[in-house]
Image (cartoon, one colour):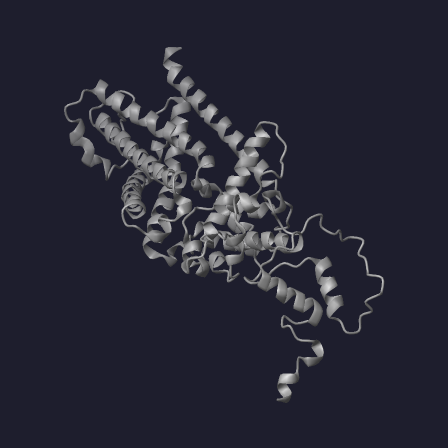
Length: 445
């Protein structure tokens, strides 16, 4: 029984981590489904190609070459090293050692590639930490990144450093055990795996006995896989949830041309009727049996937004590229598109905690005013710079426009200048305060 104890413990840890991850995924899905339905199942081929180009190919990351290339290194390392994680899990369940070793030269290439990527990831993460904490880059110094967001970003960097060091330590100890002919590690076929990086760590183990080396290797092995499982479950609480959500976010992103805003059919018909000189203002309005007047115009809270907007809030990487491109933010306005997404996510989390306690959603606290101020909303120039800058297709502008619509159509709370323009359009069919009959007088002068 004692011989199987490590495998039993590993299964317990693995199953517990998977169950906790499933619980977090369930909460995530519930929070996203708070939003209204929106159809994003059209043009499947176009959506798939965009996902492969933007999410998998990282095509928008390299617009900032240094950060983009470093991110691609970390991203490729994360994806490819997961093959090594698969082997660790199988070894942990079956009690085997390097079960994929039968692949021979292919396995050597794989392990060698993993080690080189681990070293590159380690270097990239260190550069990321320096950029974030020592170089005073403006987009990392914004007010919305104070406290937890900054700490969260650093925690992930520390996590990745530790995981890479543990991986290389595990391999180095394993290589030394193979060279010493240790039972369970040594193979008649010779050295299993290629160790282009960890081989340089062998001098650290020169004076160690086989028993001590096994303790070092097993400790690094356990800490490495448990660290990965902790990292997986930490994602839900971190901005690094984009590792999982970037792909669906790009796939379901808006394919309409930027600058095209949605219209409410009921309002569009009213405007067309008002602008039609041949329309009878006293005629009975046409009704469409399939069209329902919305219960609420625009959005004041997260459940008024659609599910894709809520998915985007969870997908946000907090990189700040949107805010760095925002002309309103550059000119000192309060608006930060990154903060719009962070506030939306924080409000969803607040509601999620209440739902976990069995509480109902109330209007005592809402996205508008409690999280996002009206000053922020009206500072937006609707230029779409934030949408264009986002590496994974997030659209902060759509949230801003929905909340503006609520202010205008539900509260009549637009700025005075805009109210005057809309009143003029309603009365004079133009934003200027001139009677329709006098609008062409300028041409006679």
